[in-house]
Length: 240
Length: 197
Image (cartoon, rainbow over all chains, first blue to last red; front, side, top):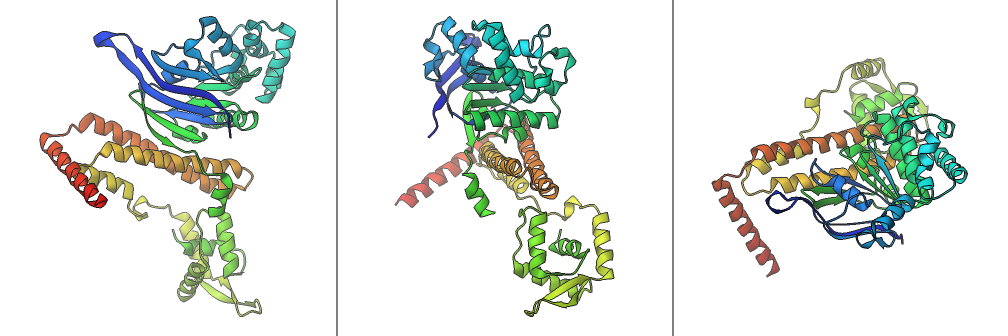
């Protein structure tokens, strides 16, 4: 029995009002357990990214609940949401969002330092995270001196540093070639499998979505389909 | 393709027994193409008739015979490897035909057919990806076969996305079709009601 890390209930998000109102999400329910990776697919404008930003506390829903690790983001103060974001939620974006003036280790330790951790302690955590994404040797390198795949690894290290429970990735492979993209997926998958993190991956690439335990399909702000969870691996092997 | 060419390929290096051929065929294709022993022996009989293999002198002592490839068999194998597979030679695509018919027959919810297929194909793609993950050290030929199926599933999903986009641009139901759709729905209601009775 896994613990639910992310529990989204009847989530709605409306941009604008009156005649111009755009209903980005119209009552979405989604639960993601510890160790589970869920991919969200759907055409552009279907609400995929809005779902992810609401799940991560970067956007305020119009209605419904977003419960992360037992905390309902919609009822918390802004400061409390920000604190939860720094401690429990990791974000990975398509364009990496690294700060060019900071080294890899400084980028990774930034959320910890913002949260009040001393620089030396934060550096230790950052080095451990860079080790987990297999680039410990790049700790003192600047983003501009790295390949796309290396930058995305730094971004993932930043998203998993400390004790994160929820990893949200918005098109993390969008700017990478297909082999590097697969390696990034492998990394996200391992985080979920080995560290019990709950992962949500937004992607338009079916090949990458297929790494997930479940794939949900969003259209016009509504979940219209789901595939998975897969039967247990040993069941599958027996049938072969 | 044929099991025929697969068996010829496995016989190229040395003579083998039927059960051996079956095991090696499945190992090479990562059990993605299970063969039963009957298929193997039927195929060997046909190959022997066509002069592409012949019974070898060795015998397992239990009455089963070994087969070896002939010169004609080697030539056939070379020509098989040299000839690209033509798309026309493959069986007709049931899914394309199903969608074409769904469009041609009024009253079918084509978008729902596309969506159901998309999730079903996605599920296969997930299963194949898991198979690839757990068999990363299972040898290159197995991985190639799995990748081939992964690419095919991915292509099918992209094609479904394409169909859906085309349909939403072009397929505005005409009044006559709406009427037919209502007719089919009411037919279905009656069938359901009948089934319940």
